[in-house]
Image (cartoon, rainbow, N blue to C red; front, side, top):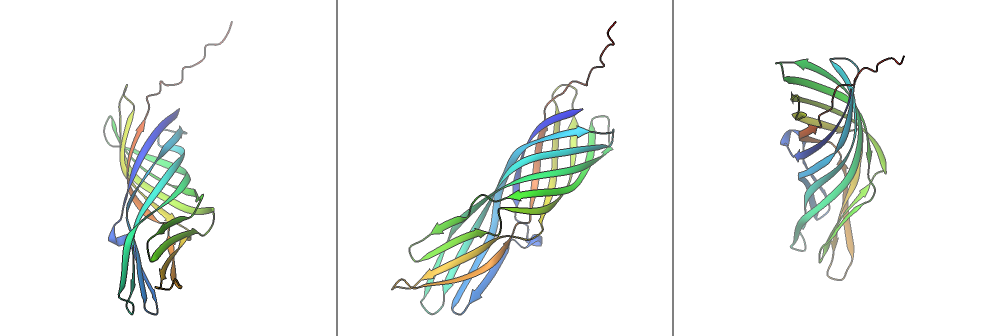
Length: 216
């Protein structure tokens, strides 16, 4: 049976996954910190057996960052926020464990194609943050664990968590300070695309496929 669903996934910036990166050069000190975000999209699930299914989807992911830049010698300090948007196409193999008549636990693992259509820019009076993509197409691995309530008429309701592990740096973070005469000084570091989400999914109700009657 094939089932269509939708999902929303708030991004959770846990300390365990190093949401903050600090970097410096000379008198310049900068930081960039993942403060949260939001992913949403749709997915299609196709069942092979009672315990195995394949799931493919497409999501838009918005990562929110705080950044700060300090120049110790010029008594300069600036901070602001910047957003980086990407798209993901995961392909997952799911395995199920039945807990009760209506409640199931499932785990999934598989690859994801991550797409980054553009860079991100935030300009201030004497500073600038610029996130440049490392490539428009990158690979990642995705794993999740969750619980699913299956009703007879209202569809399936899912609550779980997903870890998205990027194979390489997602972007290059550039923080630039402009002196009083307009001379720019830039510090830069790579930015990881890995993150953790809490997943809320809904799969629409589908009637079981009916057996076709043979024609006379």
